[in-house]
Image 1 (spheres, rainbow, N blue to C red):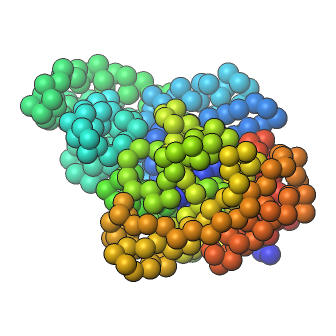
Image 2: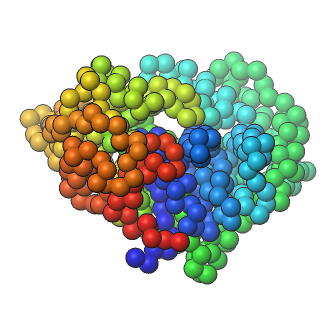
Image 3: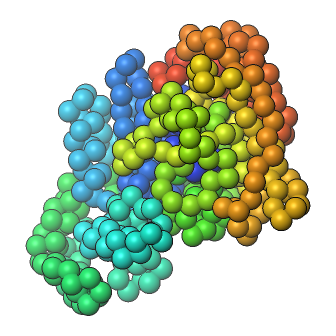
Length: 436
């Protein structure tokens, strides 16, 4: 199959294992580009037992000859990014202007965004959204507001930036003081800090949209790396318990500065069960011993926050919706687990029931916290699967489970992950397996 660009996007509520899939496919691409989200994303990669947790830097940074791009749609936190860059360098990973490009049009997460995020959540109490308190939502809010927004390229014009920041900080101080009695920020001290970040990163800051469009014109392959998951998309997810950007494949053109046809071959990533961090409806959640067993076996704790994830059964209704929305050509199924003594069957939700009606198609306007699930039970496998490297190595029960998911989603399972390491991957019906 002649595949040019590739998109890797999560189909659940984030934490699907996108980092491993991007890492596995990144070597086949010239560019790996982030187009949404910010430091609230956490992509984990295991390279020969050495574990990397990446938040703002694309996962392609772990491959030589790959140019990594942070697009204009990302909420960029220079403090987090610089700490991440330095941490990678200390571990022997090359990070410089030849392999990392930062969009001058990416909006900057500032200290007042983080404080506002945290204080807003505290004020909401039991009605809180469940953010990571990384300032992402307030940053995107300022992007829409425009007059109080800062873009990364602004840091390269120190005098203009300092003058403008004074006005922004004055506005923020008044608001935070009036609403939360917060200690005011020092605008000049903040300007000094962020101008210094601009100096450190100046050689990496550029017009990344132009770079990626030229790559498309020249036939150089780009991998678009999504953050979070489709069910957290600000427009199409379980609103209002969502993130603040367009995280589906629909967000790529605006978030990376490329035409829609550049999206290419879409790989939707999903776990063999479901998990969610924070608040919001979760129809298949198991807040019981089964959920605890899944959490324990899947090591379900957030890469970014460390928070324990809510766990539940595979939801084919929500998955089919997300896959259709993203135009997924194939599915990467991750965290395929061994069974446990207390789990005799893995369940798949095939429909919802609401007010006496069966619902086969996901409707984001439904009160999803009030639906009940229609399940199919599939026998659990007890044999270890971590050493499997082809589909036929898997237990028959696991093969049947995967085949049923393919049928319900109407798409092939291209990649199956049976463990964290790079090599613990089965290329099943993957259109990219023969790419060089």
